[in-house]
Every structure is written in structure tokens, then in C-alpha cells.
Length: 246
Image (cartoon, rainbow, N blue to C red; front, side):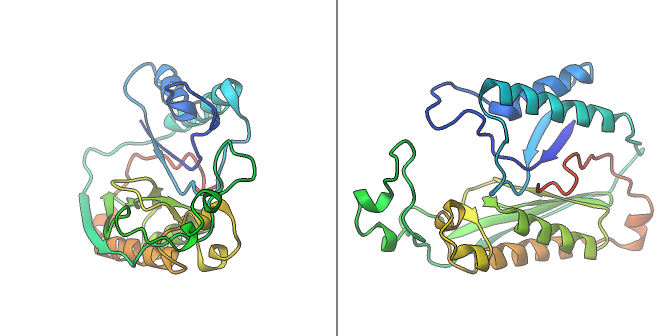
């Protein structure tokens, strides 16, 4: 059972010292029990600006069990096919020069930021730490597609990718965040200059979202449906998060 939903796994906060799968682990465990066995896999969406409303162990239990129950209910409505066309595409995209976009807050240090420790941090080059090329891929199962990006995209970016998938005839476009590598956060140009944590953790400049959306659009275009594929392509997948980005 493959579940796609967009949320940070941060019910347990920065002071937590437990080794934990957080709400994702609870969701998978509860879903496997609800379905009477098998393996459940949680794949995250565009969760860059999505945090769990409840925290602590109570949040893990409530959110995990709620997602599992919702998915189990949808599972019963899924129809299957005897066969599906499967097709994939993958490319490494060259990235612009990475730099810090502001002074990142330090967890557990009150109002202190990275610039309080390293005065020149705002303009510190990151070439030695960040990737110069990053992977973007897509996997089509029938008329549904999974678009994989290597970072934490905000909701607007996820919705933009879904819109590109819809334009190319896909019944569902699932955004898969945190996939295959990590480029930090991915925010729009408008968000880039607002000083938010997500904006400051976007390392590839004001055009980061545009670059990511265009890279994934090319992958979706490469997998775009033909009439033959669309006629017999009822993939057994569940968009349990609705838009998958809220």
C-alpha cells in the first residue's frame, strides 16, 4: 500500500533524542494492521511549508491513525487491472551556484542565528557542501504518474507540478519530495524574499522553484500519455492527501 501525503515528520521536536519514524512510522504500522498485513510505504509530497498541527506522542498517534484510517477506507474502493504500462524517466540537472539566503535560525538557541556564530554566513559560498547536479525523475503507472524531486518543495510548487501533470493527461500526479538526493528547500521567487525559514533554506537562488518545475515538466512530457496508454491505464493508486500538498 503506497500512501502519498505532504507533511513534515516533526511531531517530535528539535529537543527529541529518541530514534523515531515519527508520524510516518505510525501511519505505516496502523495501515498494515488495518489492511490485515502486507507492507505500507509512506512517500512524502511537497511538504516544505506543511507541519503537523499536533505534536508529541499524541500527535503521532492521532495523525498516524487518521491517515491510516482514511487510506484504508479508500483502499476498499480501488479497482485493479490485470496489466499496466510502466514507464520511467530520469535525468541529472545542472544546478546554479548555491549560496545562503539569509541567516538561518539555530534550533534551541532562542533568537540566535547562524550569522551570530559565523558573521559572513549570509554570503558564504556552499560549493563544497551542495551538489552541482541533482536528479529529477518520474514514473508512470498507467495513467498515473509519480514526479520525484530531491528536496523540500513548498505547497505552491507541488500544486504547479500537479497542474503540469494534468495538462499532459495524467489522472493523478503524485509529487514525491525528499527523493534521491537533497537540495534544501524549494520556494517560489515571491517566497524567496520574505525572510521565512523555508526561504532562507533555499540554497539555489530566486529561480529555484522555476528550475524544479521546469525539470519535472520535462520528465512529465517524456511520459505523456498516448491514446493507447490512456485507454487501459487504470492504475491502482490512492491520492489520500487530496491535492497532496496541504
